[in-house]
Image (tube, rainbow, N blue to C red; front, top):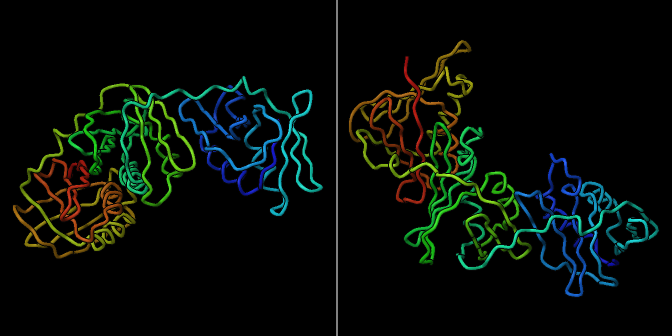
Length: 367
């Protein structure tokens, strides 16, 4: 194998596939990047057996075809140190060694055989839909903080992608909250699957922040995302996801309409005293178009009043402020609504004038 490539092209594509390098594995080959050089072109591939990333063809001069695997960290570090002004030559020699050369600088490092590298799963391209890259990126950002971090229910460590009625719903759930983000699609598919949050975190970093359409293919076991730079394949989680629609109701006995930034600032101040402790919640009292936010711990107390528009009954309720802050921060609208039923029932937060997101948060019991 022998290629000549610019440092920029190598660096950009190493950064892409590096997101699928396994940090904890007993298989050394998973710590490698596969360099595949065929007559069609040069690609890089990484695969941690849950997430796999394959670049599109990288602009390069192909002198000799072949396939090798290089340890990702050392390969990346070497390329970073080389000159920006010189092309980089990569070629293999006998006894499983690879030469990486740029100008007068030359490295000789051990490589592994390409046929040892686990091939990426093949995803049949039957079920598919299109979505804006930036829209998917935002949908993940606006929900992923609610994914469960415990493995007592493994299915909840991922996000539900639910396609129905020309609409995509992405849902994340943990023990205290539900986050829902919706977007319109042009598809007649009705299907659902759950992508691990680890995969989604990396996918979100790769997706460009523009309106370029990306293609998403899915089967019962895998999802394939095709971008302008690479292909991303993730395994799916198995199991039955929470029936979230049963609890995201529009029923309420009290509802308030308020400025997002005003309540966000007040809750962030209150959380300085509560220290995000479940045992020291922030208390909310709603009465006479006034929202009173208080917090009391051994560190001190906090009190604030916010004028709101209110409908329904007076109410006192308590929450871990972090959960409300997480939700309000990602809502794009300036005005929000928060609806309540009782002091022991969840509240639901929405952006005013839109149904594209709903955030359900369980309260804490008042002493």
